[in-house]
Length: 85
Image (cartoon, rainbow, N blue to C red):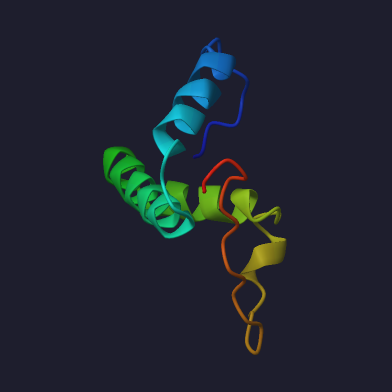
C-alpha cells in the first residue's frame, strides 16, 4: 500500500534539490531526467501495485475511478519545469 501520510522529511530541501538537479537542462533533457528518476525510484520501491497506485494518485485520480478503461484518450505531453531553458 502506498504511504500518503505526511512524514517529517525536509520537503523544502527535497524540492530545492530537485529544482537544482534540473538547472541548466534543456526541456528534452529535463524530461529524460524525470523519466530516469521515476524508473530509479520505481526500482527502489519494487512493488507494482504500489507503483500503480502512485501513478493514479499523481494523475489526480482516485484508485477506484481509474480502473475504468481509458480507450480513445490520448496521453498528454509532460510539462517541463519553467526554469528549464
